[in-house]
Image 1: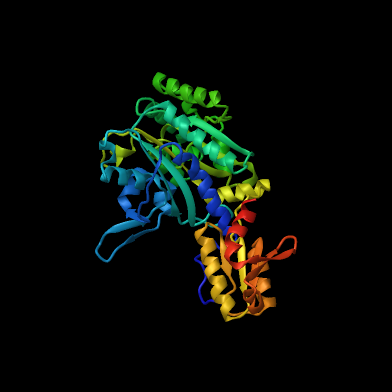
Image 2 (image 1 turned 90 degrees about the vertical axis):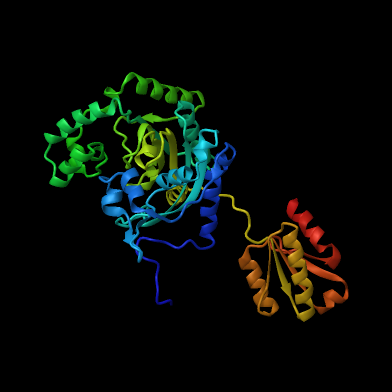
Length: 421
């Protein structure tokens, strides 16, 4: 056993389970690639101020969960706790918004880091696929992103998820609601930290998961009752677009996302089979974030879906993905000449697009066939000196057990034909 173990709250992705994670990432990304979103990759760490300004200094992410550190050169950096601020920073730095084709549509996939109490579905290192549409204020864009996430989940076979939808207003109507909410919160029996948070960002208190706090919030004023006419009309258009496309959602007037930059449309994908960590993804509109981090006005919208949580949701529904076989053909050579010939055939099969593997280490027939069986290959390719003298190799169907001789020169074409059928 190794002296070292994965850090607390993290996990290793290993075969065969890792194939499911790769399939989930691909399924989430596929609708985005079909819809004009280009791939972006950002560093795993950024200037700590990027997240303090963008995510919000009063959020748990910044105050409690961010892995922040100072370099030898004195730079203050943080491992990225989420993707939006980094992607927007990269787009601004590269002046993508000046290319004349707005919105700038980007998607990404990567690991994110938060110092949290580890539990099932909540890790200190986790994987997300995200999408951002930067530089356009259009309810059609909000609807497009929600629809693409819905399509991704359904393509995986998920059915028991719900879409929660709300509007958080804008710079015109949110301050009025904020004042009303603060007045309400000041009259509650809350601890000092929560009261302090209420003064900085009262919406954060609505997101408090503690039962004793939630109990007192039953009669809290709702933002939907304070929306200005513009926000009401915008939100109604998003709702109508989703309904027209057959996307089922639930209006949730108490839905508050965990980051300060959200405005207007906000949404969350939840799965009731995951217990307390029911959110599998979410997002919304963030029209003021660009200015918060020093850029021009660029109204934007985006989401991030958790790969880890999506895998747990699949397990909760008993959905098994149809994954391509890691190995279709496994070669078993008996003798030095067979090793040379079969290795050449394995290489040729791979060039033809067939997944093929080889019995390494000079094992005997029994041990090599065990390896062939464990590999999950549909066919085993076996050859010894007598076979080669006759110009053939033995092709064994690992499912039926049937075996027949095929000419060495024809085996690649024959296996390709059989696997295609």
